[in-house]
Image (tube, rainbow, N blue to C red; front, side, top):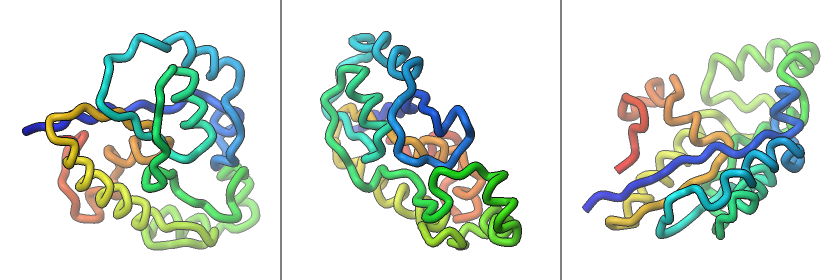
Length: 166
């Protein structure tokens, strides 16, 4: 039997508008309003899982979804870079940024490696097939983009668009 997973990108917040690494701030008024305007328009599903991030939880709430927090759906932990722009980090730690951008195992910020995020996503998605014939909605700020990421190819995972959807 086939499971269907629907990916929802969370609404806008100040960090995203300012191109900062997520700092846990709430949705901005336009992001909250936009999500709320879609409440009730989504098809029903068997389960709604959400990243523990404030942005994702608030988006689910604004959409009127009763979501369960799934820790494995958390975005990349960027450690001490949290809340900074890439330009700010580049000004302070240019060698660290270049290493991070070119090596998926690098953790110069003291958080999680990109490879670690990818592997966590793969583990979770491999287990998501357990919703036999079910429909699952998933809100996560980083993992959705990961499915299209060049890192997935570098990690030797299946190629293609939504590669782990069953």
